[in-house]
Image 1: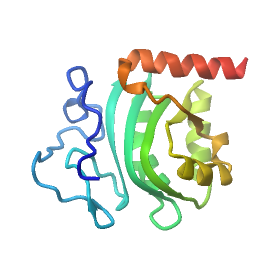
Image 2: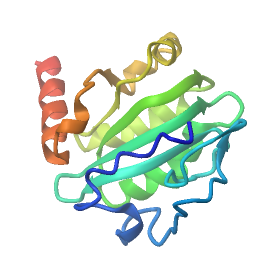
Image 3: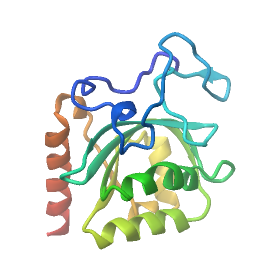
Length: 187
């Protein structure tokens, strides 16, 4: 796990630590010192902490004019013990929502497990973005994680999509591709 870095090919156009509107503004990362872990596995130091001991993320792009954010995640999404959805909602999503972000692309291909609990924070997040014609998409969730996510019927709040080649897109084009797919599903 320590070799999995957040996607960095867009760093020439967006860096969360340099964005004054980002929840991670001013954060400094070591390139060499590995201190964060998911259980007993070290993760790359570029991942951001938000209050969970098992789940980390990186805001890899935000567009304040088109009101969307792309967030990559790694680790175990554990609502049962860690209440990760509450932490990510309060510490990251609420701050982005205050900046009028209403469309969220969660890159979840490195979310290895999902343990569910209550649906309230998912419902709250969904209700907030729906008021503004927004949406939440989890992209490329592993099959086992997806199974647990679906079993809890969370796909009502967060749309699961597959787009393995997402890295070849520029942020705007990735956003447009997902937005168009969601519009097709609605029509």
